[in-house]
Length: 125
Figure 1 (cartoon, rainbow, N blue to C red):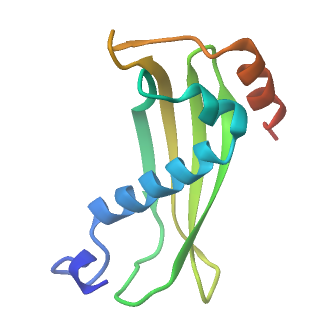
Figure 2 (figure 1 turned 180 degrees about the vertical axis):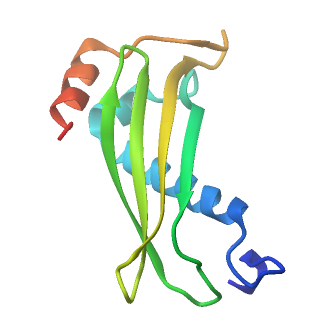
Figure 3 (figure 1 turned 90 degrees about the horizontal axis):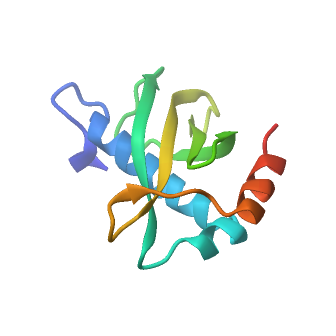
Protein backbone atom coordinates (compact mmCIF):
# COMPACT_ATOMS: atom_id res chain seq x y z
CA UNK A 1 0.00 0.00 0.00
CA UNK A 2 1.25 3.54 -0.65
CA UNK A 3 1.12 4.40 3.06
CA UNK A 4 3.58 1.53 3.74
CA UNK A 5 6.26 3.10 1.56
CA UNK A 6 8.94 5.53 2.66
CA UNK A 7 10.71 8.43 0.91
CA UNK A 8 12.73 5.89 -1.13
CA UNK A 9 9.43 4.63 -2.58
CA UNK A 10 9.86 1.13 -1.18
CA UNK A 11 8.19 -0.60 1.74
CA UNK A 12 9.34 0.81 5.08
CA UNK A 13 11.00 -1.60 7.52
CA UNK A 14 8.23 -1.29 10.12
CA UNK A 15 5.79 -2.85 7.64
CA UNK A 16 8.05 -5.86 7.10
CA UNK A 17 7.96 -6.42 10.85
CA UNK A 18 4.18 -5.97 10.88
CA UNK A 19 3.75 -8.57 8.13
CA UNK A 20 6.07 -10.97 9.97
CA UNK A 21 4.02 -10.47 13.14
CA UNK A 22 0.86 -11.48 11.26
CA UNK A 23 2.65 -14.49 9.78
CA UNK A 24 3.82 -15.55 13.24
CA UNK A 25 0.31 -15.32 14.68
CA UNK A 26 -1.08 -17.43 11.85
CA UNK A 27 1.75 -19.94 12.15
CA UNK A 28 1.50 -20.37 15.92
CA UNK A 29 -2.29 -20.66 15.81
CA UNK A 30 -1.99 -23.36 13.13
CA UNK A 31 -0.31 -25.65 15.70
CA UNK A 32 -3.17 -26.96 17.87
CA UNK A 33 -1.00 -28.11 20.80
CA UNK A 34 0.69 -24.72 20.98
CA UNK A 35 -2.39 -22.58 20.41
CA UNK A 36 -4.16 -24.45 23.23
CA UNK A 37 -1.27 -23.45 25.54
CA UNK A 38 -1.81 -19.77 24.76
CA UNK A 39 -4.56 -18.02 26.68
CA UNK A 40 -5.24 -14.99 28.87
CA UNK A 41 -2.40 -16.05 31.20
CA UNK A 42 0.23 -17.44 28.81
CA UNK A 43 1.57 -15.75 25.70
CA UNK A 44 4.55 -15.51 23.40
CA UNK A 45 7.03 -12.63 23.33
CA UNK A 46 9.85 -11.89 20.91
CA UNK A 47 13.33 -12.12 22.43
CA UNK A 48 15.33 -11.40 19.28
CA UNK A 49 14.97 -11.15 15.54
CA UNK A 50 17.39 -11.03 12.65
CA UNK A 51 16.02 -9.57 9.42
CA UNK A 52 17.56 -9.68 5.96
CA UNK A 53 16.19 -7.32 3.31
CA UNK A 54 17.11 -8.86 -0.03
CA UNK A 55 14.98 -7.13 -2.69
CA UNK A 56 13.04 -3.90 -2.70
CA UNK A 57 9.26 -4.08 -2.36
CA UNK A 58 7.19 -1.39 -4.06
CA UNK A 59 3.58 -0.16 -4.06
CA UNK A 60 1.13 -2.84 -5.23
CA UNK A 61 3.65 -5.67 -5.00
CA UNK A 62 1.88 -8.83 -3.89
CA UNK A 63 3.68 -10.68 -1.10
CA UNK A 64 3.35 -14.00 0.66
CA UNK A 65 5.20 -15.54 3.59
CA UNK A 66 6.14 -19.12 4.36
CA UNK A 67 7.00 -19.98 7.96
CA UNK A 68 8.82 -22.88 9.53
CA UNK A 69 9.97 -23.87 12.97
CA UNK A 70 13.77 -24.11 13.16
CA UNK A 71 14.49 -24.70 16.86
CA UNK A 72 12.68 -25.69 20.05
CA UNK A 73 14.04 -25.09 23.54
CA UNK A 74 12.46 -25.69 26.91
CA UNK A 75 10.94 -22.19 26.91
CA UNK A 76 11.76 -20.82 23.45
CA UNK A 77 10.80 -21.34 19.83
CA UNK A 78 12.72 -20.12 16.80
CA UNK A 79 10.81 -19.55 13.57
CA UNK A 80 12.04 -18.51 10.16
CA UNK A 81 9.66 -16.50 8.00
CA UNK A 82 10.51 -16.05 4.33
CA UNK A 83 8.75 -13.29 2.37
CA UNK A 84 8.29 -13.81 -1.37
CA UNK A 85 7.23 -11.59 -4.23
CA UNK A 86 3.85 -12.92 -5.35
CA UNK A 87 4.56 -12.74 -9.10
CA UNK A 88 8.28 -13.51 -9.44
CA UNK A 89 8.40 -15.77 -6.33
CA UNK A 90 11.78 -14.25 -5.49
CA UNK A 91 12.75 -14.09 -1.83
CA UNK A 92 12.52 -10.42 -0.86
CA UNK A 93 13.20 -10.78 2.87
CA UNK A 94 13.69 -13.31 5.62
CA UNK A 95 13.66 -13.15 9.38
CA UNK A 96 14.61 -15.51 12.17
CA UNK A 97 12.67 -14.82 15.36
CA UNK A 98 13.26 -16.29 18.81
CA UNK A 99 10.16 -16.21 21.00
CA UNK A 100 9.61 -17.21 24.60
CA UNK A 101 6.53 -18.65 26.24
CA UNK A 102 5.75 -16.46 29.23
CA UNK A 103 3.32 -16.01 32.08
CA UNK A 104 1.52 -12.70 31.51
CA UNK A 105 0.80 -12.12 35.21
CA UNK A 106 4.24 -12.99 36.57
CA UNK A 107 5.98 -11.53 33.49
CA UNK A 108 8.46 -14.40 33.36
CA UNK A 109 9.29 -17.28 31.02
CA UNK A 110 7.58 -20.63 31.51
CA UNK A 111 8.43 -24.08 30.21
CA UNK A 112 6.62 -25.63 27.30
CA UNK A 113 4.38 -28.52 28.30
CA UNK A 114 6.18 -31.77 27.46
CA UNK A 115 3.46 -32.93 25.05
CA UNK A 116 3.55 -29.58 23.23
CA UNK A 117 7.36 -29.63 23.12
CA UNK A 118 7.29 -33.15 21.63
CA UNK A 119 4.85 -32.05 18.92
CA UNK A 120 7.03 -29.05 18.12
CA UNK A 121 10.23 -31.12 18.02
CA UNK A 122 8.56 -33.43 15.51
CA UNK A 123 7.92 -30.42 13.26
CA UNK A 124 11.63 -29.64 12.86
CA UNK A 125 13.22 -30.39 9.50
